[in-house]
Image 1 (spheres, rainbow, N blue to C red):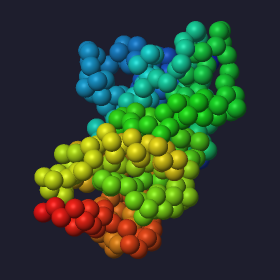
Image 2 (tube, one colour):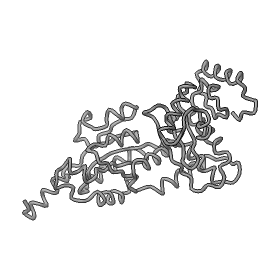
Image 3 (cartoon, rainbow, N blue to C red):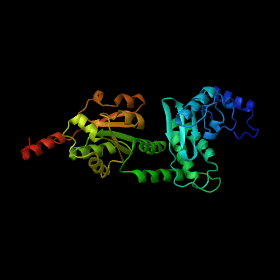
Image 4 (cartoon, helix red, strand yellow):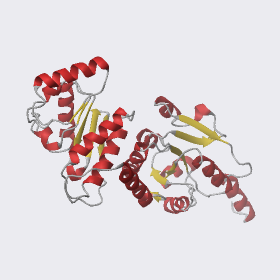
Length: 332
């Protein structure tokens, strides 16, 4: 809606009525400050300035933005609101539990003309093609990042989006990432239907069994993510004498393995938080576990993903390796 007279109240109501009757989604990029005009829309994609002038809330931080988004959702009965924020990226608000910040991934910004049009165009195509709102938001954010790198009103091609994703994944591959950065990268990957595999462990002393396990895990999908217990986490699980190698050493060793794409550290004793945040397509553990013992199983099965148990290579164990070393050197 450019607010130039084409989309009158009558036309908007007719669109909403027919779409609802046909069970078709309606996605709106608004111009009017009266969002009640868009009642019945599936998703609304305003920029931060449009939100600010449309709500009786002074927006100074993310919490205020969340309250403003909630206000507009209640007003329009939309399922989600995607707010573009210029250099600060965008936020997708579905409810208080589903409030996702998506940072910009633009390499250079020459001209922001048409960026909003790119966002709604790509977001809409993705939703109409079966992507969920978060995946569609990641993809539209990436497309807008390509467009602002051009001068004037520009378009983005599928080839440019794929190239951008490839470059972004190459830039960050085989590295240790904070969870927020990891979510950004995996969001981009999922938007192009990459299959994410996740496993976790202490990996204190890497042995042949680990290598074979990771190789098999990688073969199950496109991207293998390893959640690595921090030193603090290992001590809680294994005792004060562990780990043998620091988290930095363990992470560097894993990063050197070609099968692993990304590593992220966690302080907790389980990787449940990571699993909830990145939502892998496949959760992998060794067959020495029973399926109902796998931490995170209920989470992944809850959103339609699956758990795979891979065979364990006999004769390999970190604990047994340490016991052999201690025995050989008669250390008690």
